Length: 294
Image (cartoon, rainbow, N blue to C red):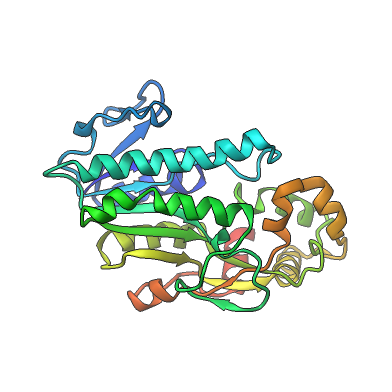
């Protein structure tokens, strides 16, 4: 397939592009600024600039673009950046695809498991209503930005990705060094569910969705365990204690408006992926922990 990828430089995108090429697909990357590879195409979502020829003749578009949520304080200005970096890219790609006569018929669009808000131990599939947290509101507008592509009859799959587990970077980028130093422990009560997927399975699932006849929201998760269970499993694998609890009040001070995303509980199930025949290589916490700690 000929595939256009936006957001190729992040944790997921930097693993996805070589995996696509290893599968024999041709990849064009949409990049801001000067292209660094022969098939790179420059675009500027903030200015609404994307030449339709960048997508013409492609089979599918994968959009992973969006500013980081947890790497900076969520000030009013940062919240606006987080939202617009998602709605502008998704909206520009969707409207451009909708206007092409011979263009990609599939949009695999990033989204987030934070869509559901704080839901305790309730098991959540893709039919659940969206929550009321900041990021749930972002997801609501983010996914709505793809409406032009949907109305044009294109297949759009929204990747409601859980916590992506990787040996370096991502959600474990800060947690793993603490666990290795013997300073790990539950965050808040530790009873909140974290829905997770390993980086290899995230990449495999995205490639799977290029062909699988799935549209609408897709819970990109392999499992859901409490924060305490995940932390203890990491500590056992690294032969370290996990007793240094971070109180909820301290997390709220340290993380500000991002605290609800860390302390909230989302127990999602991958119904759409499972029904479409996807089988993860890291299906349980033991396999996932072995992957990230070896």
